[in-house]
Amino acid sequence: MRFGYAFSTLAGLSLAALPAAAFAHGSMKPMHGGIVTMTGETVVELVRAPQGVDIYITEEDEPLAASGFDGKLTVSTAGSKAETPLAAQAGNHMAAPGLAIPAGSKVVVALTAKDTGAKTLASFAID
Image: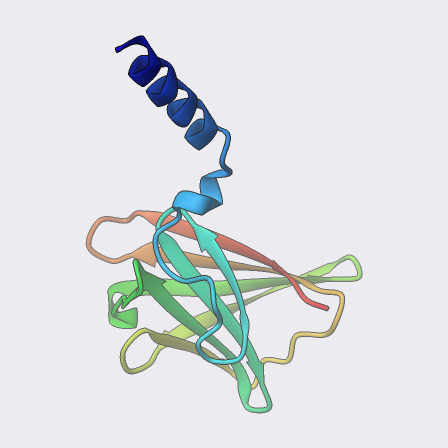
């Protein structure tokens, strides 16, 4: 009985030592060729494209309806800062048409849930 207790204690301690990301819900693999970050339970993918910037939002690998959020991008580059609204598209897609993000920029995606007012902030460093 003592061995079982010691084993379960050691197993519990080894699980506690794992990084929090090991318990994250949802894939961190880019699904649209962009870069991905997780904030809380929400995965945000930022895609720089010739026509602008696209954002995709998921939670536990399930798309979140973009129409349920207000959003904006804040781009900081070389000491200047600019905000651009995000427009909801079909599914989990939001877009900032015509926006180009230069390399070396820092980007914050700010999403506000229309039904609850809950805010989600995701930060990206653009190479």
